[in-house]
Length: 105
Image 1 (cartoon, one colour):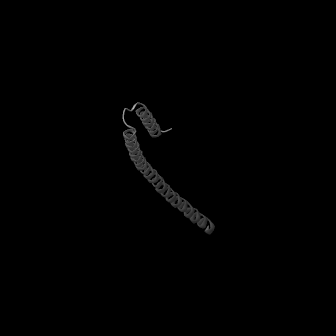
Image 2 (cartoon, one colour):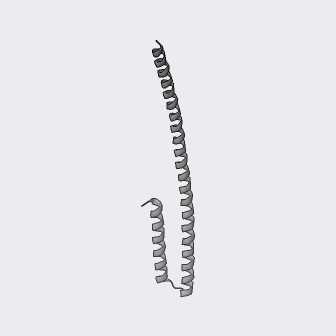
C-alpha cells in the first residue's frame, strides 16, 4: 500500500470515527447534526477531489519523465546504430578493395 493510499485511508477512518462520535454525543437537534454531517462529507469530497487532481498531476509528470527517458535512449541507440553501420560499411568497402586488388594480381 503506498503512502498516499495509507494517508487517504487514515483520513477516511478518522472522519468516520469523528462522525460516529459526533452523532452519538451531539447535544444538537437532528437537523443540525445532519447539516454538519453534510458539510463534513462535502469537505471530505472536496479534499478527495483535490488529492486526486494532485495525484493525476504527479502521474502526468512521471509519464513525461519516462517518455523523455525513452526518447533519449532511443536517440542514443539510433546514434550507435548509425556509427556501427558506417563502421561495418567501411570494413566491407575495404574488404572489397582488398579482394579486387588480390583478384587483379
